[in-house]
Amino acid sequence: MATTERDYYELLGVSRNASHAEIKTAFRRLARELHPDVSDAPDAGPRFRSITEAYEVLSDPERRQLYDRFGHAGLRRGGFAPMGADFGSLSDVFAAFFGETLFGTGGETGPRPARGPDLAAQVEIDLAGVVTGTTLAVHVHVARTCAPCGGTGAAPGTSPVSCPACGGVGRVQQVSRTILGQMVRSGTCPRCDGAGTIVETPCERCGGDGRTIEDVPLELDVPAGIHDGQRIRVRGEGHAGVLGGPPGDAYVTVRVRPLEGVERDGDDLVVRASVTMTGAALGTTVAVPTPDGPFEVELAPGVQPGSVHTVRGRGLPSLETGRRGDLHVVAAVRVPTNLTGEQRAELLRIESELGDAAYRDDDDGFMGKLKSAFR
Figure 1 (cartoon, one colour):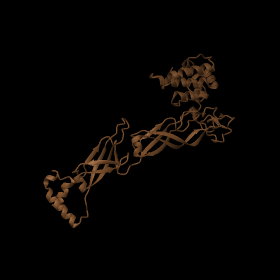
Figure 2 (tube, rainbow, N blue to C red):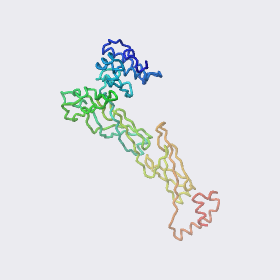
Figure 3 (cartoon, rainbow, N blue to C red):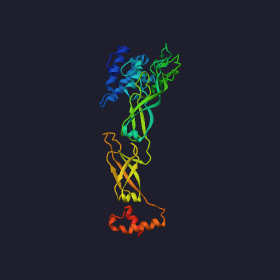
Figure 4 (tube, rainbow, N blue to C red):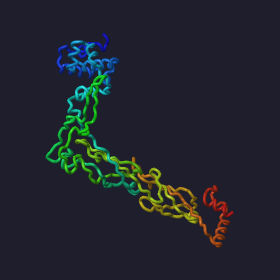
């Protein structure tokens, strides 16, 4: 006898006078054992289809009676065809045949507590805040559990009731018989939108949602050394969960306002120092902007255009180590553009007295270029 023609009682391992409960128990046990989600045996798929077909027949009183009298031939004459549907997971099989989960009754398939959504916010700080770190109070609009109803959505003194359409499961199933056999369709319950319960008397505060939108202050600790665009995660400060689930998290993006005249390069700072031609030649002290306020830098005589003077430890702190970076001062030499005849003659006189020894060997510096221009 072919596999599909095997005795259904033998396939399920029950006697011919087995009760409906015994047949159901046998199928549950074999389904757990043979479903492809569970078993790696090469014949698990065909065997699972066989026991499913057997249960389809023996769990239906009319089909079972027809099978007991006429066997497989009687079923075929009666128009029976195995369901043959692909349920996907083992849980789908149990839901289709028993209206329950893999581990219990239908009530256990109802909605479960769900974590609340995360919250996104943004703050701005200046470079001074990057140096020291700061604590901010950020006002955010966030969903919180409704206090009067405790998140149930029902008016105080009342409670949600089980949805009569789905029996509290949150999903409904429709079983139809077609020429191809029995077909099962499952979907979200349209009456309760999958909640499993309905609120007959909604809470006035939240309108039955169980949550309210509130404007609350969020205390945010911004660490020293943070970079523009980085996000800080604040656990448990997101939107409230559903059915008592935990709240989500808050993710706050930190934007760092630029300081005029200051560029950030990692943990280092770069500033340009405006120096006159004579100041570059004679040496000078310039005040440059920094997050800590104006800072005076001494430039040695003969500073060249574009040369960099580095001040150690005057940059920004490292987010990882706390060690401060450096301050790089770039000399920007200013050349006079509107000379009188007398001033021009004086510069020519000075130029003639300086000689080549007064200049560096390379002609890339400002004084080298000035020398070539006068020549």
